[in-house]
Length: 227
Image (cartoon, rainbow, N blue to C red; front, side):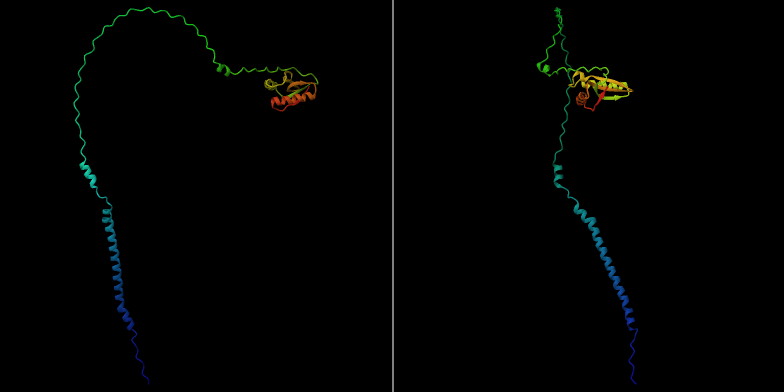
């Protein structure tokens, strides 16, 4: 019979791992402590540099030249005011006698004469505008004869409105170049209406020619009117 190989100890690795675990934990704890100590040292160095080193470097050095100049500058000298001399009263001037003067006779002034107005200068005479000649407005004519023609410029239901328009048209035609007979204005009543007409013509052709001239003078549209 063959002999069986010896059985190795299965618990040997477990015992070795159990012995190494405390050592590894101690190493990790030492590493963490050293890292914390290094960080604390760096923080302490930065605090000391910020608190003491940098303020001392940034503070300006006192200027020795300005202090020496202030010590060397002489203090302003104040002169004491001299006492004012007392005012000596002056004697009043002697009174001078007033001489009486002899009254003089004053000749009366001649009576004032009205000054004649000075003639205006030639430039002012030339600048005066010439008097404007206003032509008289044509008077209102009577009624048209049967069969006669005229130029109608308006029709109204009230007599006052028709008369106001007739006066305005007559004033405007007075400034035109129409002959006096063509500028005569009338108010003709027919039924219940009032017609404002201008001029008078014997036939329709003459009335149309007169209407064209009145249209240009009044600058408005007109119509023909037959009695």
